[in-house]
Amino acid sequence: MFIKAATRSKMTSSLFSTTFVVAFGLVASNNLLPCPVDHSMNNETPQELKPLQAESSTRKLNSSA
Image 1 (cartoon, rainbow, N blue to C red):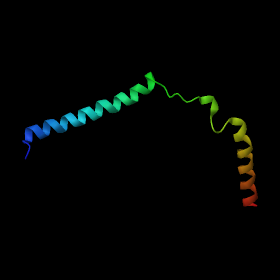
Image 2 (image 1 turned 180 degrees about the vertical axis):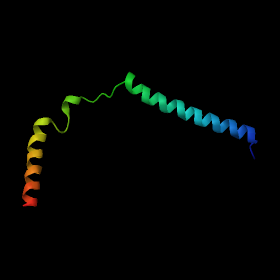
Image 3 (image 1 turned 90 degrees about the vertical axis):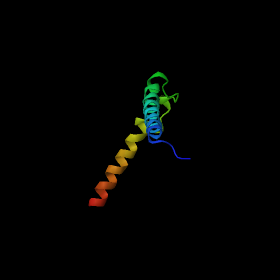
Image 4 (image 1 turned 135 degrees about the vertical axis):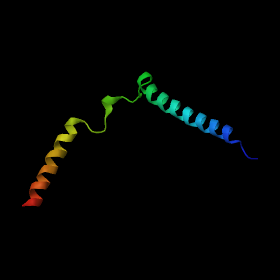
C-alpha cells in the first residue's frame, strides 16, 4: 500500500509541473481567446460617474462644515 519514495517524488514533480503549465496556459489563452463581453455596455459610464462624483464631493463639504 505504500509508494516508494522515488515514485512519490516523481508523481509530486509531475503534479507541480502540470499545474505550472496549466496556469500559464490559461493566462496565455486570454490573449488568444479574449473575453466575449461587450465592453461598450459597462455598468458605469463616464456620464453616470460625473453626478456621483459631484454628489460625493458635496457630502464631504457638508460633513466638514
